Amino acid sequence: MEPVISYVGVGSNLGNALHNVTAALSALQHLPQTQLHNHSSLFRSAPIDATGDDFINAVARLDTTLSAESLLSELQKIELSFGRERPFRNAPRTLDLDLLLYGDVKISTDTLVVPHPRMTTRAFVILPLLELNPEILIPDHGLASNYVQGLSNQAIYAIPKN
Image 1 (tube, rainbow, N blue to C red):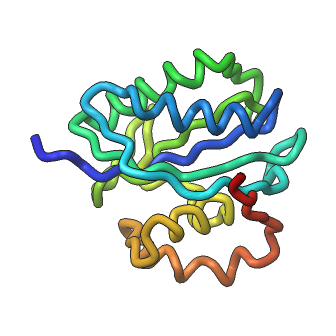
Image 2 (cartoon, rainbow, N blue to C red):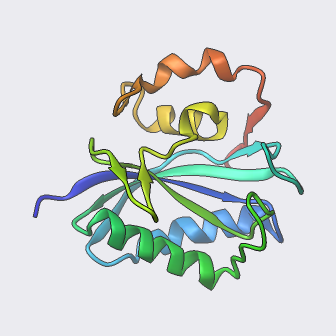
């Protein structure tokens, strides 16, 4: 099987969020049948439809031969290793790994929806994604760049690299 280009949203707003996101990006390098191609800068943003401290976010590009469902399972294992709990929808989290895009396919099952259903309404997804690929297309939505103007009311700040 040819590798599929996939994009994963990485976020945290519990504990040492900056460390959690950085460590999660490192953990992505060790996924089976998967290569971490690159990742965006880190960004700070206020929670949307959630509570708690500001989030630290990034987007990673993976090249994988795992199926989308297997990739999701591996991402959930990493979340659990960081102490991820799901007490209620949009609860603060030590780590959140969202499969945003899996090639150019659309998936809708009980456990997985790709493209991620809220990605076009989240600056913390669109801006890091565009940093990785300014011309990226979202299946059934068009160019990701078309959504930037509609997200201008969401405060998001790039974290300077050390």
